[in-house]
Image (cartoon, rainbow, N blue to C red; front, top):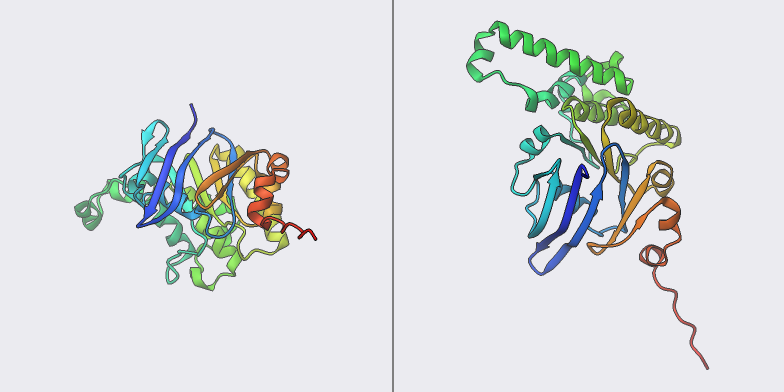
Amino acid sequence: MALLEIKDLTLRFGGLCAVNALSLEIEEGSIRSLIGPNGAGKTCVFNCLTGFYKPSDGEMLFQGQSLVNKKPHIITYMGMARTFQNLRLFKGMSVLENVMSGMHCRTSAAFLTTTLRTKGQREEEKHIREVSEECLDFVGIHDKKHFIASNLPYGDQRKVEWARALATQPKMLLLDEPAAGLNKDEKSRLIELMHRIRDEREVTIFLIEHDMGLVMKISEKIFVIDYGVKIAEGTAQEVRDNPKVVEAYLGKEEEEETA
């Protein structure tokens, strides 16, 4: 059984069909990419999966359970974490505090116990801190845990967001433009990190990315959509050679006028 199944997913905004009867499956332990021209509907798919948008039609099954009508925090608790194209850090908080916030979905202490500082609450807080520090160490910025998040270089702020996502203890990680704003060396380290997350933490990865070089290097299978419709899927070579994909990105060549 696939870890994630999308069946005839459709999203409409009035007369606009942003996603049109999209179906795909993602196997556990895989790295998959969703690509397409600007405005193709990629982020809309992620927003449906993570509960930010309610689909107009179709089904989304994660580990056999429906995601439809689930709130974002419930979907996170189910094991699906996400990063965003635009950083969404608590900029006035420390790096460690940002990552600790990611474990909110795994905490059990009620308001009264946190106010009274019970033994159970103290033990839970210690566990949250330990897991968060381990995630920071995993992405390589543990030494900056006390820095204010907004004072870090952009590449390190990205790592904070990754560590926070990992702190939710996900089964699947959705990455929206993870290479945006990164230089060549940072992109190389990003590819290495994604492989480590999949191999060492057994997290399935599903990403949206415009950097085709990165997509072709990291993806075991690629899904291509255009105007909300899936037009191709396959290996990097199969997608690269697909005429529908070439047309979507480059447009049809104008036919030469005959005399």
